[in-house]
Image (cartoon, rainbow, N blue to C red; front, side, top):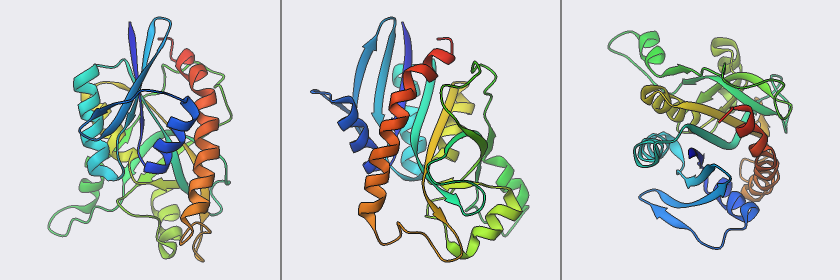
Amino acid sequence: MKKIVVIFSADAEWRAARKCCKVAFVDSTPFGECFAIQKGERSVIYVQGGWGKIAAAASVQFAISHWNPDLVVNLGTCGGLLGAVERGSVILVERTLVYDLLEQMGDQQQALDAYTTRLDLSWLAEPYPQAVQKGLMLSADRDIVPEQVAWLRDHFGGIAADWESGAIAWVCSKNGVKCLILRAVTDLVGPEGRKAYGNIKLFQHATDVQITKLLEHLPAWIDSANL
């Protein structure tokens, strides 16, 4: 039987997934809740991974070691960089970069390169199940700082940023496990900031909408992986 782990990071993302899947029973891991749904010859295991790079890395490694999945899928949200992407767009992540590393004793670029991951997506069949924008996902343990938007775009070529993709992609790469990261842009950040800053309900509502859409397309994405 093929095993697919679908991991969610932010609490709002997990709540949206539970509501969408309408499960009656959940189990637990050291990082949160989990449940499994059998789909023919596939077992799809939904996992609450936790927010931030530490929880993301630890929970993905736990999931890989515990379930030995054929594929790890991360569904979630992100902030888009104003002018580089549109609100509501879905990013098919093909490269991740952790940008909050600061090396002041050695080579800064070498430090950035150490936690930059290029995802091999050659196993995905085209056309894709939904409209996506391929690109680089920037990750840091913080929301996007408005004053850094131009720097993130011009220096790294980023289009969006989140808290966990960099850790998830890196751990999957180290374990040689296929990884699919799909992140929906819930808000745009520019020099003036973003609408969701200071408005958690706006983020939660947008997350409900986007996670529901991602889950609607998930079976087709799994089919396109030829598992």
